[in-house]
Image (cartoon, rainbow, N blue to C red; front, side):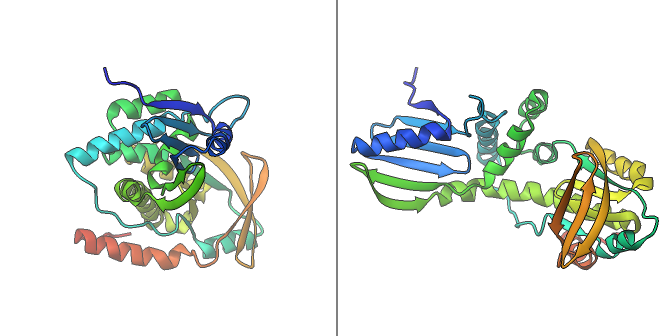
Length: 292
């Protein structure tokens, strides 16, 4: 049996104290940092891994999924290779004329958000990037943060710092890691983006906006958009909102689920302008003409 060389060092809080100790002891080592992950690699090959922040002595729920997703992606690369990809445009788009119409109306229609459950996790499985066993395990444990982080970590660019006798002598970036894993991240986002754009093409007269993986439409069309998502193999949950104002490019609304006001900068992200370009790109890609 191979001797274990990688050990769990705890959270990032613990990493900071471990780093100070290594420096004060004038040790030679390398650190690898990205997002919520840290690693100290010693000259003898021993590695200490740190993940998450301390919160009531608990790590981020589902953090273990990060390494499991990367192992499945490794298998994909071994069997198929690294896929082609394009970086996705804005992951929020707005039907500004429809939103303005709602705000100005004396009797605005109720607006409902249809939020796809574990969207990126489902898309990763649909694209074949994670195995069925990992997919089902992720849904079973139900750790929403873990599902999100495991996909987001595919796009990280680790920072590598080399220390000699406790002094940092070199800082570089792990482009090899980034070039290997980030295409999977961007393809997951691109699939989701295409789904959202397609929904606009179908429901544009009753469609207000999409925010990442949530589509907002007139309440009276809720069943139609739900059937659309079901036909694509997704489940969802719903919540109602009320648009309040759109001034100086900032859109404000009230979220009834969270019982709070929310806002986002929406100017220059009008889907009425970007949809024709997206549609044209899809026609060129697949050689077909879609009818709205």
